[in-house]
Image (cartoon, rainbow, N blue to C red; front, side, top):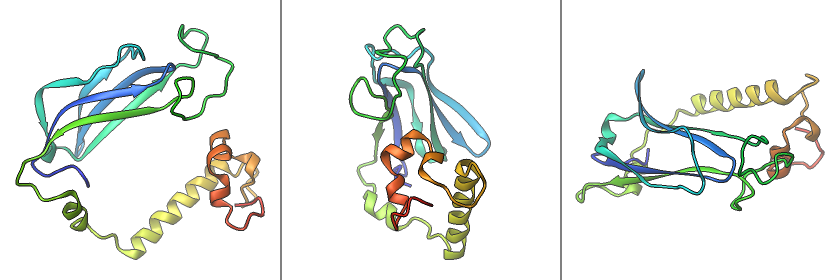
Length: 175
């Protein structure tokens, strides 16, 4: 956790590019959910930092969750090319979604490093179970012919473009 104990969330600034359609920021605490910011009609040319009427006490937040939507259709009047396959990127004609947060931290607060050092350590057996779960879900999702091997053409374009080779450690074209 890197949110500072005793900290306050003062505001948020959503950022997407031309295909960005909507942005919603929620604070979760247990089963409770609170919408902090809802921008149903995001406009790249009208980017703002939104200040909350009252600071959000971060000690009362378990998780901040951002949900965004994009519109790559012809109905989007600022879409540079609805027929273009869009990937993540810094350029305006590419796409991204980030949220910048304004956080106030008490002056007498311990440093981030200190907070990270006191984070709970995951039991190695639990870590192995989590990894196995991720791998199982990955194979269930992308091993189209269910042969226990994922070849490059079975993965989405973005995985092929940005990272298939990172998973294929022996360069045999199979995962």
